[in-house]
Length: 317
Image (cartoon, rainbow, N blue to C red; front, side):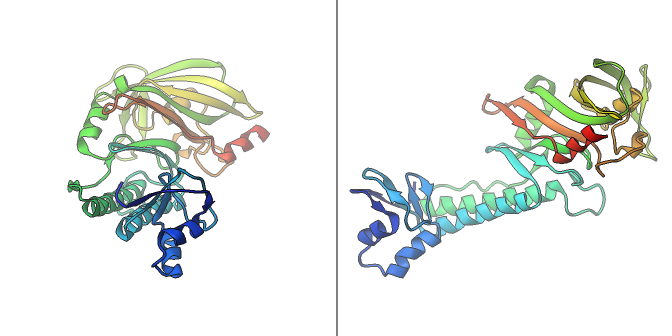
């Protein structure tokens, strides 16, 4: 790691020990090393003056440019969190997030505040700051264009786990081998009424109406129809609603919403597909789990999102 490195000779608090290391520097200048995030202890950034040091610890003092770059990256991450988006997994090729209900995944018209635009800005800042670090450290920087690539989508009203790629190759590989690489994909929803069976499967062919953009479901194969298969298991019941876990065998637009309506029990809040109630003021559908094998590293990636707190209200209805 680039920076000045020191082995701690004796137990001490961090700031006094820094004064010992830099006796010719002003006390204010030494304090600024901490406040500006330039000091690492055993590889971890530390800013507390009284952080305890043990003999044998390693102190690294980073160049000012690197600390600024890291701080800027952290600020970019905080911007994502402030928008209500949680980052569940990130490496050089993929970014998996927890999307809030009401946020559009990607613009379909003039919308600007989308998940795509938020994450695209995030990866661009990260890439720019990494190039700055590399240059300061004497490494050859990656000058390829930084952007986000959409692997799959979930509806605006749906919350939960969503994966993006950081380069076109990663996107193409995951999309082309989606069924092979995705080991688990679960959604949880609250449906209107009491579902008759505790578990089952729905199969139909879906065709989008170009005018209404609503998906029509047909029990037999039809022209331009896409086969959709959904498995479901009842998790719990209240007086007027049924909590159901859905597992997708195929991933078609609005698939779960359409198949819930096919069962005669639309998802609460889904007026588009026949729901008559909306007790939590949102579509009661959540992408809870996504497990896939990272095609670049070969490692399994398991991402889960806790159910929205508002879903607990259904138990009272």
